[in-house]
Image 1 (cartoon, rainbow, N blue to C red):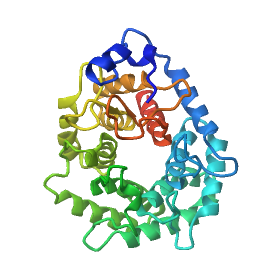
Image 2 (tube, rainbow, N blue to C red):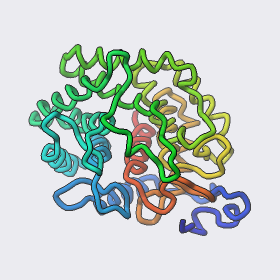
Image 3 (tube, helix red, strand yellow):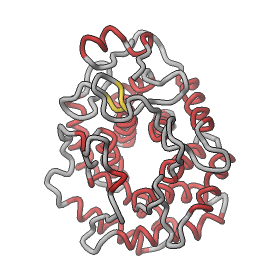
Length: 331
């Protein structure tokens, strides 16, 4: 990983392994947002989607899908619609969307549904593809409420760790939202069935000291719980993130680690904003902004021993950064 000595506290990095930031240097939020949006444009393959990361040759329908929502709401409407129309061209006959390996994933399909839902009011052409996507997701939420996938191959990290299935909570809010928007009870029932399944898990909101519970996935869970109305569960989980947050606003990638996950910071800030905990959210988002690379992007992990894209910039970090800033400035 290349460490920016000015922005990332090089001496502190050597001493502690964690990228300590200089809180005395003000950050220009508008400039950070502008750079982040430009990063997405720079990493969009012409006439296709957004690259899976800054070093990848493949594109990701999943991340392109939920970036559509973020870009549209930041005012980049034409760009978002263009990405949406590309998504239409890669939707599979069964309504699903594939990962960069081409294999359909329930999780990925749900994230494209988020984008289509945002575009639908302006562009009715997205309604039927949205229904097809949600029909696929409905079939993949089992009778017991578990969210199933045709494979979990893309959930493996390089060390063999499999990311927590609890991240599948993030499949449920768009089903609930689409169900209400389109007056489709099946989608609402599927979301509730899924929540009933996860609610029974005794360790559901435990921020575990393991890579499988990366703050990025924990962040998926916390935002999803808030969006599903599971406020007390979300608060219980976020207390554990708060317990390991440091004075500078940083939160370890998982308890006990010395490195941070950029995306997780944004997502935990989002959950706090949605709960009205503005001071906690502002502190966390401020730290993340200070990690932003000159390109406008973010590495997945910062700090010694980072195990999550420490030398490649990832588009989902930009997506959740934009979402966090929008919530901060929401009147």
